[in-house]
Amino acid sequence: MPIKKDNSITADTFLDGIWKENPVFVMLLGMCPVLAVTNSVSNALAMGLATTFVLLCSSGLISLLRHLIPKEVRIATYIVIIATFVTITDYVIQAVSLELYNALGAFIQLIVVNCMILGRAEAYASKHHLLKTIVNSLGMGLGFTFALLCLGSVRELLGNGSLLGYAIFGDSFQPWVVMVLPPGGFIVLGAWLLLFNWLKERKINNTQHSSNTFVKNKGVV
Amino acid sequence: MNQHHSPQRASSLSMIITLGVVAMLSGLLVVLTWQLTLAPIQENQRIMIEKAIFQVIPKATQRRTYQIKNNSLTAYDSHKSNTGKNKKNNSALLFYAAYDDQGQLKGIAAEAAAQGYADMVRLLYGYDPQCQCIRGFSVIKMTETPGLGDKILTDQAFLSNFSALDARLDKAHNTLAHRIVTVKHGSKKQAWEIDAISGATITSKAVGKAINQGAEQLLPRLYPYLSQLQTLNASTTKPSHNKKGKQ
Image (cartoon, rainbow over all chains, first blue to last red; front, side, top):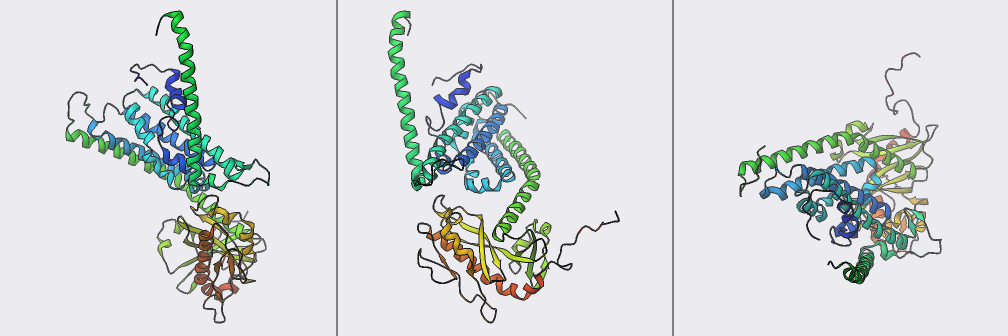
C-alpha cells in the first residue's frame, strides 16, 4: 500500500480496514483475542466492539495531541492513553453486564497490548488529522469486529450447534467440542485465512487479465 | 504546553510535562468513569447474588443477609460491606437466609470457592436445613474451559447430584458426618458423593471441594441459630423505614 499523503477522506480511508487491510485476515494483528474469545458470537461481538471503542477513542486523542507529544516519549504516551480507555471500557462492561464481563475474562484488560491499536496510533493517528483518523479507525475496528464474528459464528455453530445462543441444529447434532477449545480457534482462523488469500489471489489474477486488455486499448499502465 | 516541531531532541522538561499531563488526563478520565459506573456495578453484583440465591433455593422469594461473628448472629448491613473492610474479616461467616412469602425459612445459601482447572471457581450453594442436604449450587465466577468445564452448569446427570446431597452433621454437631467428595464418573454410591463429569473431572472436583469446605466451616457454626432463623420475625428483619408517619 502506498502511503497516502493527502488529507482528503475517501471511501478507502474507511474501507481499507474492513477489507484490503483487515487487521486480522490481512495484517494478522491482535491474534490473542482473535483466538481466545471467539468461542461464541456474543463474546466475539462484545470483544470486537470493546476493541473498536478503545481504538476509536485512543486514536482520536492521539491524533489531537500528535503535535504536542515529543517523539522520544510517544510510545509511553500512547500506552497510557490506550490503557485509560481500556480501563474505562472495563468499568463500562461491568456496569452493563457482569455475565459478559466474566465471559470475556482477562481479555478486556489485554486490549492494552493489542498491537492493532498501538499500530494504528503509531502508523496512522500520529500522522493524520482527527477526522481522517476517526474514519480510518472506525473502519479498522469494524474490520476487526467482522473478523471476530467470522470466527465466532463458525466456532459456535460447529462447537455448540447454536448461533447467539439459539440452537440451530436439532438434538441429534453432536457438537465438535474441539471447535470451542483453543485448537478450534487455530483451525478456523487457518480456514478463513485460506479463503481470504484465495479470494485475493483470484482478484489479482482477474485484474491482470483485464488490465492487459485495458492497457492495449488505452495505452497506459 | 510548548510545541516541539523542529528540534532533534525534545527537552527533558517537555517530555516530563507531556507524560505528566497525559497521565493526569487519564487519571481524571478513569476516576470519572469509576464514579459513574460504581452504582450500576454494585447493583449488578447484588442482582447476580440475588439471582443465584433464588436459583439454589427455588421456593424463596426474599432473603436476608447474616453473619456469624464471635459466636453471635447479626444481620449484615450490605452497605457497610461495600467499603471492602468487612470482607477481609476471616472470623466472620457470611450467609444468606432465604424465606418464602409467609416468612418461612426455605434454605440457607453461602458462598464457597475452590481451585478449578483454570482459576478459582466461586460458587453459591443452597443448604436445606430440613433434610440437612445441599439442594443446588450456582456459579458466581469461573474461567473454566468452555465446552468442558462449564458443563457443571448444564450437565443434567451432574446436576442431579444436587437434588439432595447429604450434608448431615455428626452427632456432636462439630463437623459434617461425611465429607462431601467428588468421585469418578459412574462410581457414586453414597448420598454425600458427587458423580464427576467425565472430561471435566477437575472442575467437578472443584465444585465438591468448595462445597465441602464451605459446608464444613459454616454448618456447624450455623447449627445453634437454625431455630432462631426459622421464621422471619421482628428481631431479625431489617430495620424498615423509620419515617413511617400516619398516612
